[in-house]
Length: 260
Image (tube, rainbow, N blue to C red):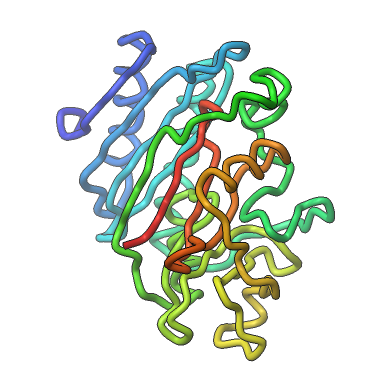
């Protein structure tokens, strides 16, 4: 099984990378699920003050795409968390999906997808003070996928399976670009470019952010996130009205998802 795992290690000792690959292979070999297309990546974050290791595994479990990301100051601990996270994810996919438990945080701004203030990534905290307000972090990566048209309940399952901060999609019932993210009393919240008051989803699963997505340029979105130390922001392009998702990466810079 180890030979079938595509491994990438950036700034991590090869012996540790091989150990993580072996442990992932042993885990997969011992499960009854069909696990294919395994890719494992270990990399050191490039934050100037804090050395951390990011571990990520992508796979298909019984035909469903999954992703697990874990971060730790110690590379070996990050690998331990990755293997345990993959074990849990395989178990979740193999069973009927159920909402993950969630404790509402009163200090989580509603306009911010997944900014729960319990994100353990030190690169996101205090970044503005380290870098200086006058210098905004660059958008390091731009993704321009063809947004999936699906019901919000389906988008929630993708959010969980892929370890996303927030998931950008198009709701076919409203034809609005939307995001789902972890927040609120049910654990999942839905935000849309132009939300409708009448719910077209399961209200016991999702709560609705009643405000429309703010119309911002990419520069304005970065500025808002940087000044407020937000980890992610859902907004609408001022010209096209299409939804966009700006999120802070593990290295403290930003990634941008803008659907086609």
